[in-house]
Image 1 (tube, rainbow over the protein chains, first blue to last red):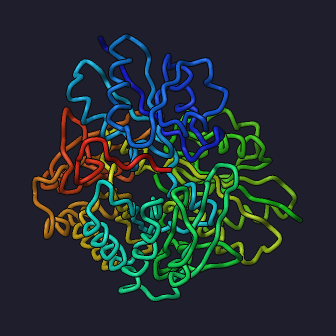
Image 2: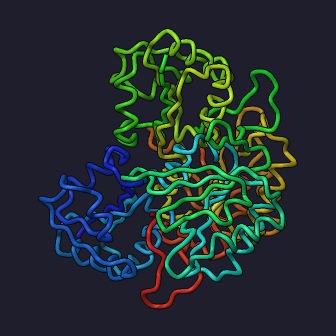
Length: 253
Length: 253
């Protein structure tokens, strides 16, 4: 009774990129549940805990495990990479949580790949932006296509998640083809692989070149807006359209 | 020579919501530069450092101060709230940095209000989403309007930054009016004030109700997509359109 499950965003991978709040939630847990790869990334620090990993496609099972552990009275944490509320498990936990009204949920935010990848590339999302996943496992391709067009027509900077997988090798090329209906081929773009993990690789290119970029499921892709530039290997999106002396929007609250 | 400036995202406010990487960058700095309010939020931990604050609209001056300090050989950190690459100073630092080719820039990502606010509300951004600022200081209102319409037409979940200020009291109402051309009045929405700071307040409502919501410059506003729901005071955006057993998109890489 009165149990609470922490749904923890661990950031891109290395522990230094977790918030203290996230680290504390994991340290205070009796049991940490997550996808195998994420538990491995957590490293030795939490090896004293009971760790339960499930494989890639067993999200519902993973959630139910959390509630079962919490019902046993264990302090339970579910770990997600990046932010648990960005293509992560937060939503599914609330969904399944309908059956467990005695258990409270708390989401601990983390740094999502849009922001951690942007930091590697410079400042590609420094104005209004969209985040779109190219995975059509849970979303019909027609909706993805509609969103790509809307993002291009709105002149948003764009971060693309899940640009490729074993079964979807050509999805980034298809997405670029759709964007190229609206956006010029020379548009400044970039991508980052293994953000905050070993073997981080970043590259900048044009939208035309992005079509044939080698990406995988650990790559996040960035498409600039009409004012973005590549400079010294960095992808920079200007923070405004007018630059009148000192007048500027400040911060992100 | 060879100096490096760290552009640090401090997250929403309290220190527990900073990453260790961000804390380390500030601890290793000789001088920390930032907007007065953010330096105050950092609290006592960094009071031994040289702290230089500038007021709200002096972004260019703040950047130039950083480069001047780094040229003196001081380890310099510029602090921004949230993530430095989301309506923050990263882009302007790269811009002004053209005049300082000897000085390297490194962006340390932080948790932006879209994600920290989402965590308070539940899971409002758990599918494709847009981030739009309603401030027209640096962006003509016509572009903001175009983006609001594109976001609505693309059925994105939306996070709105800077929904109000002293001079722009009716901007959220105007934005809702634009969204209501495309989106039904009953659409699930929410907003959070003072995320990660004292006096955090959250509310959920319909898009029609959002028009007259009391918001200020410390509020982040969330508009759900067509599948979003309000449940037990939480705003939940489903992670997909199809739910077929176990097939699911996993994580945010």
